[in-house]
Length: 440
Image (cartoon, rainbow, N blue to C red):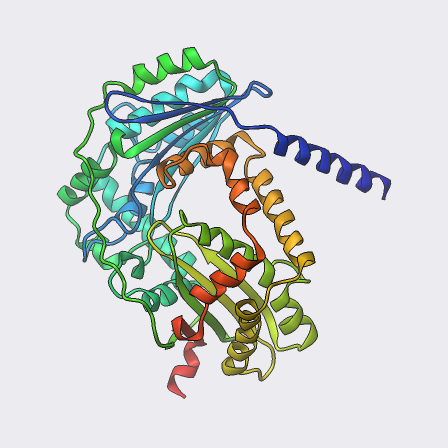
């Protein structure tokens, strides 16, 4: 017990220290439009090299979904100077690790190396940007990889297509209606020239940000960045014009079926504003209030007290153009979807009609500060935050200022946002059912 208390005290001290320390960075543009952000932290001999491209699942033509996620895989296939299948071998043999991920709005690649391999990381990311090998053999190989991923994560996974089912009902026109991973028939139908054209359009320096964070020297790193990225040609300026969605003014009732589940789910979804809006931060706090931890309002009510649900959760899924606010519940026993929907609405109505208590509000503020500290507790986390804040939010210094947004949120803001976005006539109520019930 004493050791646990000591550990807890140390955690508090580290958190407090991390919170007080501002993240310093240097940022500038190369002539080709590549934005560069450098963060020097010489406390450990580790460096993160990362590139975030402003391309995601929503950047597609009808009938050609899933290209951004596909490229997340394809751009590990190899380059003119990195042999097929050698990418991961090079990284691991130099004591590093790497990964990539794609959302509807951006794609992120990164390597973490011992700092004496900083130049290697820069070279590899410049190779990915300038010299990728996009040939039919690699496309066919990665097409099978993506298909297998879809089978494992979505089609054969319990509740795997729940999010897709909800987004298809929340959006009618915007590309967010389709899954980030895309449809396999679209990838099968795509020609090699289409993949090459997609790369040429989006994977260009003026549509990306390079972040180097960790044990580095600013002057030396600038020289290396110029050497490896300075001569990469800029692409054409990218313009986006996505269709706007008409407001939801009447409740939408929908059903979806899943052969991998036995327990149905009730999902309530609302369309919400861009993650750049202050209201999106307020919705994060509402999520914590409703379902973060055993003492949260929905969990305590539906799971602990009334024994109506096995599980319940509220999530603010933040995106660049529109967000999605989802509340998910699994019934216990004979509890119906209608009962769960009614009980959930009762708690949201309280948010619309009354101010939450000062005690609950202070808990939310504390959670926001803790989450803020944790997100920047590692060099890799800082690199991600710097890239995201610049590329998607248009403000790199959010890494230092974001906590001020949460601190300026009031109880009145929570009530206002609940009234603006979380009304019964603005929601989709989705019954996500076992496939066996479809024939009943």
